Length: 256
Ligand SMILES: NC(=O)c1ccc[n+]([C@@H]2O[C@H](COP(=O)([O-])OP(=O)(O)OC[C@H]3O[C@@H](n4cnc5c(N)ncnc54)[C@H](OP(=O)(O)O)[C@@H]3O)[C@@H](O)[C@H]2O)c1
Image 1: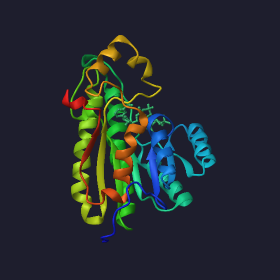
Image 2: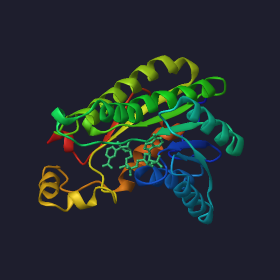
Image 3: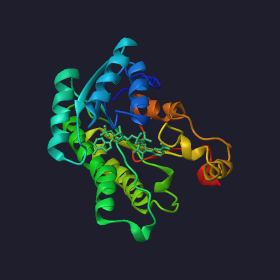
């Protein structure tokens, strides 16, 4: 235990593993974490994209290492952590970011749809979170940051499985925070609102998308780097007295 002032967002010398780092928010998180001094393990299934990102981070002067990982498979998760730790040293921080959505009216959701979403968004965070926590508990502890969603707190149509998975992840965050505090592992979540990424840009420029943006109190979509403040807070020692919390980053969406 130290009474030294916590330095916000300083990750010098820390190893961070980011799941779902091959594109979208995860690739942005990895880049931000590397710029903050972390050695970043880039985990996902599309290893070609991970290798490209590793090169971009290294060219910018950072340290990164790509590892293949399917978060729905316990053996793959374990192998990914082994490969990350062999290359970069013990994982101090896990960012549980891998996630999918299969938008459909509730009456049309298949069992396979349901399983795919819950296996990736909830079971995946359990598997990677447990693997990380077991390793962190044997050392000096660590920090786990789960990427949830405002849709874990408030539902919208056509996304029942996604909303249920993110609500489950918020509760899992609290349950893990409660149990893991005694072994020095902190577990917190970020609940992003609507963040514009290449994948959803087209929707947000449609009439339905524009209407949705008008309902956000700040009257704009989030940008990927709007999440950096919460990420760097929860990943770094600056949040050392925080566990089991959900930091909402949504331009006021949940207030609307
Ligand atoms: N964008 C938003 O507005 C928004 C808002 C709130 C929350 N979120 C959350 O933020 C996270 C990232 O979203 P995004 O918009 O960046 O999505 P995205 O662009 O579709 O990226 C999803 C990432 O998850 C990975 N992934 C999917 N299934 C996986 C599996 N079985 N094992 C390992 N990796 C897997 C994908 O990599 P591979 O295909 O290479 O495996 C990809 O890198 C998700 O959890 C999402 O729910 C996003």
